[in-house]
Image (cartoon, rainbow, N blue to C red; front, side, top):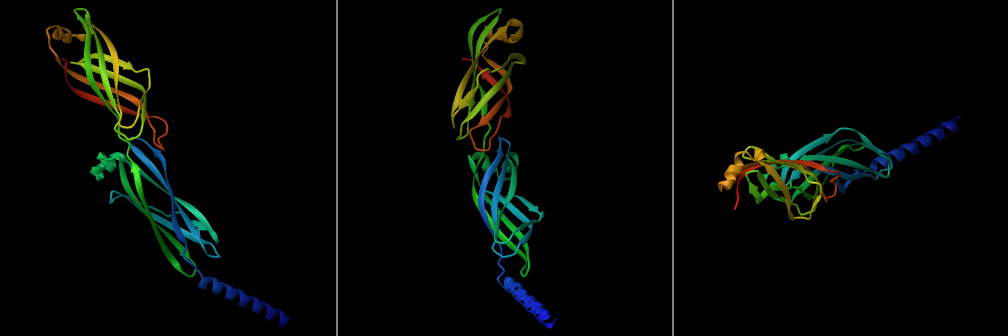
Length: 282
């Protein structure tokens, strides 16, 4: 019986020595930036996913009870966040944590006005993971990363010209030309482009363009649409044109489904346009 008790004591002592040795060799986990992916991007907003690898070099598991982050644009703090959901990293293993960051471009432009004139913006993400480790207590491990993020700019649609092909007391045959410009360094595509145009308060055009339009980066295209108007549709504009009047007020509205050749831009983003002005015919 005494021999059994002695053996148990020896084993307990050795186990305690191992525990003390483990605690003496305890190391702080490391956090390393892995990658950034654009989960979703449009002309209005973007969602980014940052991956960080958390490595536990110890022979026992450790818990992370919080991470927080600060996101900077062109050196300006833009958004902060904190996550209190606990996760555990097993002994001698690596776990990936994901930090999502969502931005609305209109808010970005309001905060950092210079960004609105750029094709991309510089970002920096500073993250800190907090661990609760036996033998060390609460430990904070900071890590940061930086890079460039593209800024999709809305395409521009403008009235370019009216050309009169035939004019009489019965009405007129005209050709309306619209210029579509892509201000981005990447390609974009238009589908189901709808136009409505009023001249001096009269509805002259209400149509959807049947063909798709593809524009390379920094490219523009001229779209021509024939218009046939009778005298009632033209109203007083007809008599003004017959008298040689060449200046008219116009209101151009419409919409288009636009896609962009950029990673993370999925599906079609419906944009609208609304332009008013004075047009002078030659």
